[in-house]
Length: 103
Image (cartoon, rainbow, N blue to C red; front, side):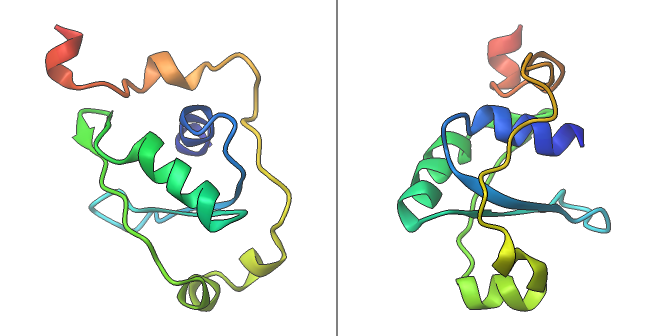
């Protein structure tokens, strides 16, 4: 839940409709679907190149058909997701800036 909340907080105002954290991945993969291609572009700009838990975030696009193959239930996910709280508690816990800026 912390990772999802942190992403939704970072993507504040962007219509993210589905998030799946791959807990088996060693790289820390997170998949997300946005309501439109424009929203996906906004999410890309919000996340790509930022730092999360001292790791560089890299965003890659996945064709919608491929996303639905991997996550069939995502096709029905149309309502924008919201963080589990409105206090933006995940942001201070998960530093979204460069570790160099934190010093």
